Image (cartoon, rainbow, N blue to C red; front, side, top):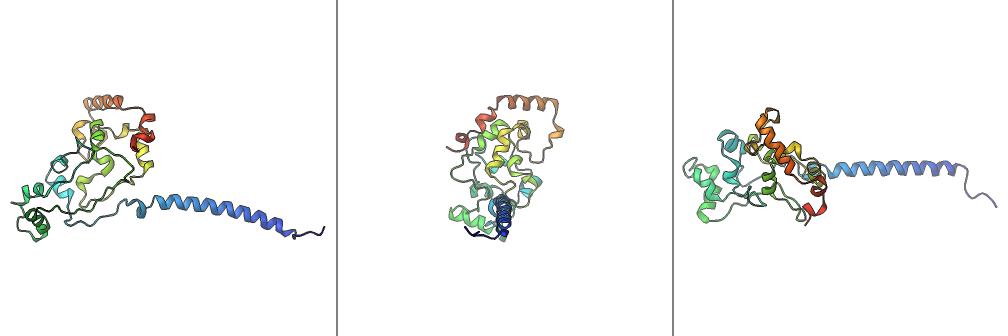
Length: 220
């Protein structure tokens, strides 16, 4: 039987296979980078708000505790957004006539909540409870960064599953003394012997990494 393909077809086939493998590898790598990109995760992207609220001014400069506004962070799954009344507790006297705060005053007069743009938005199929994490000793900064020194609110971390799992596999580095949970600029290197003992006791009470990384822990 006559030869159907030229001998060079062998080389073409080998080159095709090699190129296919290389292209598949490049495509796979590109996909992993795209799925981790700011464009898809929203990490470090500023959100425009009806009133640009500065945590740096309120928390960092004025020393307002996180719990003054996020009242349910220790008792509920959601940290809670403050009602306009909370804002007006101060701003009925401070900057009371500022045009910048007119949306706040209008919300209070009309008894209509301000429609804030959500920054940290987990998928509906992912369960997260603020109170559990706070009770275990996880500080605000572990998820939100040093927000007390941030003029604008943005997503500090990717909030992807691999990021959550990295902590659930080894939570110890994120556990801090109760007194420092709301101190977003706390330096773990300054921990005292008494605080270290408290942290060690908290770590002992955390469930195993096998249970923390079980699917049902976050997907219910």
